[in-house]
Each structure stands twice: as structure tokens, then as C-alpha cells.
Image (cartoon, rainbow, N blue to C red):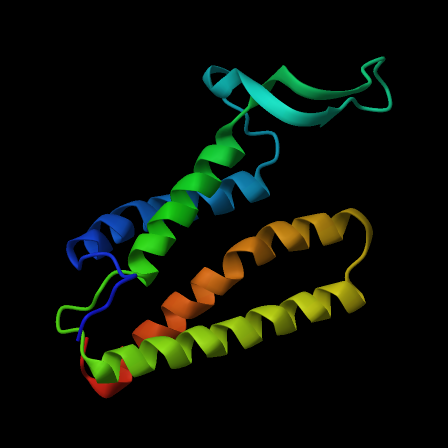
Length: 157
């Protein structure tokens, strides 16, 4: 069966190689807000920047700001590696695995938006922002878990 939008199988291992450390490091950064290595504080192009209420900085567009990019690096590594894991072909990609892939993606999408709806109804203020950061990644996480669980149950991993 021809699959046009999947990466070759060899990219799945590369994805796992980066997904596990980026997940661990991401959790570490989320629970250690004071972690900001000085060597990761770099000038970055900002499309939109609003100064803090305590400073005299106003709103600027398309300017350079000096910021710590640890969160951005971890997020990029996580997203790219999770996409490689999620959307790489199985060793023997056939119609059955394609069916499992589609069902897992639909299930993960429903569950992801259910979590989002829950957050919109019951999480407020700054905690909602933290909730949304986690929710950005849940679709891929849920899909990877559901798809691999379904493959494991079918013994076709």
C-alpha cells in the first residue's frame, strides 16, 4: 500500500532517540521555573513583544529581544521527535496498520478536544496558560500511546 504522508520507518528510531530526553528535560523545566542557563539567553527576533507592566518598555513589533530559549528548544525537539515517532511507517505498513493509525488519530483528537473543553470550563487565570502549554502536546502524546497500544494488542509491532 502506498502511503504518501508518512516518513520512512528509519525515522521512528531517530524520533525515539530525541523524544525521551526532550520529554524528561521538558518536565524538569516545567517544575523548575528558575532553571535558565545563561548560555541559552540569546537575542531573538520577536514578531510581537509586550513589555512587563513594571518596566517602561512598550509594545513592539519585529524587534530583537534577549530571552532564554530553553523552553523553545525543548518544545521544538519534542514536537519534531514526536512527529517522527507518530508519523513514521511501521516495518510492515499494510491496510490493517493504516486502519489502526486512523482510528488512533481520531480517538486521540476526540480525547484531546475533550481535555481542552474540560480546561476551558474548569481552569482559569494563569493556570489556564500552563494548562494550554501542556495541551499543545497532548494530541501527539495520545496518538502515540493509543497507536502503539493498539499495535501491541494486535501483536503486529
